[in-house]
Every structure is written in structure tokens, then in C-alpha cells.
Length: 545
Image 1 (cartoon, rainbow, N blue to C red):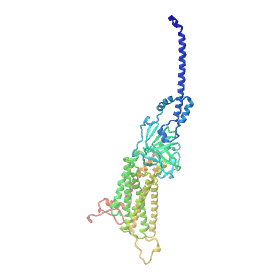
Image 2: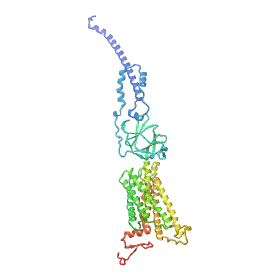
Image 3: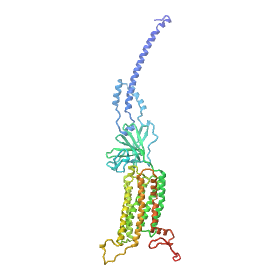
């Protein structure tokens, strides 16, 4: 139909507007319905996937509950969205990967990465061959017993990322260090957390969900008799001894060293002191001098005291106490057997007797050191340490108890020797058993001179024992008494000057004092009387030599 006038167009405009409006609203309704359906699908999948996705490396390490399978995800998705729309589902996968990466390489790498060094150690609570038998949350109350199971913790090489761990699938070999550094500690076990040790010796704890981990440097790890792996993580560590105190006592040990070397030199060179008793005393002083020297150098220069050097120090210190026991036994043999029965040892028998003492002084410490190595305990003696925890006290099981036993036996031997002197006096320097005497046989003359020498040696050994036992008691007090009191430092200082006190003993005993003074002055300018009185000047005109 032809429009004859342009004004007639205005009659159709309202009709056009109504038709356009109706068509536009119908299209909007269709788009909204489509968007609502798509949104429902995204929400359903996101809810399902976020509840089931965990970081792959952590899940592999912790080996916890497996993730929800594909069938479960499809079921939940179909419940929320009845329509099947593969294009929309496939387009949602990149959205999920951006939100929750499935590979550690897509995460931020941690700044502090574990690295294996020569100082990396796996810290075990109990000695080697032993497991936890009784434990509480505080390791100071723990006790160890013979192992029922072999200690085999899981050691891994790992890379740390933000809430993600990558296992490098390399199993490093870590040396084991025995002891617990904690004064107070938290307890973890493998029934609640996955426990690993990394290549630097640090402890790695992963929760059962595999979504979080913790790295601990100060800890100890062990297992009980049922095989449960238990970790003690420090709340507070044992306080370290101040460096000033260590340096002070180490310097005092260095002062003791020349005094001990002088005692050894005099008993090995002076003829009047060079006998079985003198040889034993010289080696005893030499062992203590060597132990003090190595010990002080290690602490002054900060040399690591673990391993071989610790066992060397332990050997020398223990050998010092074994030599003192041999010296006490030598006094006992003289007063109970050699003098009453008129036994005179020739050079061969004297050397054999000294060899027996030498064998005891070497074998005894060697056995203690071997047991220490077998248990993996530190060989460093208890000097500078305080037994604040059961673990520290346990580390000295082959030092403090053996030394205490040796000194107790030495004291008992000297008490028996004292009764031997009383026996000699009461019997008039004759044999004790009258039934062995024969009236027709002439009575042998008692060696009064040797008796006097043995008596003076016994007096020297007794005074020496007082010094050694007192120094050891001071060491026991400082080890088992906690705190920073002044008297504890004084006890350590007295113990560090033990070599000086030993040298002063020889200035107290008159016979040795005269012999040493004769050596100190020009030989021949002084003489020693038969009675052993003080040195008297000799007229050089009458004796020009």
C-alpha cells in the first residue's frame, strides 16, 4: 500500500515501538536464564573442586586420604545442573588451575632452603641401640631402654615452596647426634602428623590433610617400643654457658698444664724419684696435662668438640683417674706384701709390674670410650656442662659414674693401706704370721729405709687424693646444680687449677721437697741427710766437686 502523505507515518510509530519493546524483553529473559544456568554450574564445580584439591607433592609425602574421584565430582555437578554442557565445563578448567596450582613450580619458592652441610645432623633422643620406654611431654622426664625396634626415620631431600613441598627423591645419609637440646618441649607423633627429616637435619612436620607443614631446627626424634615415631620440639632450649666463663676456665687449665708437665719431668729424670711409683705418677700427670690442653684449645678457638677429638679428651681424662688408682694399689702392695714378706723386685719384675699398671690405665679408658662410641654419645667430659635434662645426664654415663667408682675404690684401697701400716707397727716390722716363724731360722732384717719411703709415698698419695676427690666433688656440684651462682663458677675455677694443686703437693711432702730443691740448685751444693732433714749447705773447700 502506498503512503500518500508523510504525515500518515506518525500513525504507525506507536505500533513499531510496542513491537520492538516486546522483542527486546524476550531476548533479555533468554540471556538471563542462560547465565543463571552457567553460574550454577561454576559454583557447583568450584565448591567440589576446592574441597577436594590438595597440593600434589605434600599429598604424596603425607600419604593421607585420597582425593575425591571423578565420579563423585560428576554426580555433584549433575545434581546442581541437569543440563549437559561440555563446552562450558571444559572452559572452566583453566579457571580452577589459576586459582589452585597443582605443581610446586607454579608457587613462590621459600627463601630458606634446606642444604646439606658437614654439620648436618639427625638428632636422636636416646643413645644408639635404645628406644623411648617412658615419656611425657617434657623430655627431661623421658627414659630410654634397650631397643626393641631399629631406628629408621624417613629422610628426604626437599625443596620448599609457599604451602608446597617438592620431594627431590634423593635419600641423603645424615650422621646421628645423640641428645635433646630442649629444656621444655612439645610432643608430636606419627599418628597425628607425618614426620620427616630433611637433608640439613631439620625436622619436617606435615599435617594429616597435607595442606600445611612446619620446619623445626631444635628437636630430637625417637621411637617407642611399639614403633611409634615421636618428636620433641623445643619450647625453650637449655641455656648455653657464657663464652666468658668458658674462656676463663680454659685459661686456668692452660696454667695447670706446665705445672703437670713439670711434675712428670721431675719424676722421669731425677734418680731418687725414678722408680715404679715415680713412673706411674709421671704418666698420671702427663695424661691430665694432655686432656686439659686439648680441652682448653677446643673451647678457646671454638673447634667442634664432637666426634674423634671429644673421645681423645675423654680417654686422657679417664686415664688420669685410672693411673691414680694404680698408684694407690702400688702403696697397698708395698705395705701388705712386699715389705712384710721381704720381697725385692729386680729390674725385670719392676718392668712387668709397671707394664701391668700401664695395661690397666690404657684398657680401662679404652673400654669406656668404646662404649661411648657404640652408643653414639658425645665423648666430651662434663666440664662446662650442667645436667639440666635427663638427656644431658645420660650423655655422661661413661664418664661421671666410672670416675666416681674409681675414686671410691681408690679411697677404699688407701683405707686398707692405712691398716697395713698399723699392722707393721704392731708386729715390730716382722712377719705377721707367727706360725710361719722358725726359732732355728734367723729372722730377716726388716727394710726400714724402704718402709720410710713407702710411708712418705703414701702420705703424698693421700694428700693427692684429697685434692683429686675435692676437685671431683666440685665438678659434680656444678654439673647437677643449675643456675649461675658465683660459687659454681668458683668450683669450676678450682677444678681448672687442679694441676697447680698437684704440683704444690710435692712442696708439702718433705722428702720430695728436698729432692726437688737439690735439683733446682746446683747439684752438689746441697745434700740430703740419711734422716731426710732439710738441705744443709756443704763446705765446698772440703768438697771441691
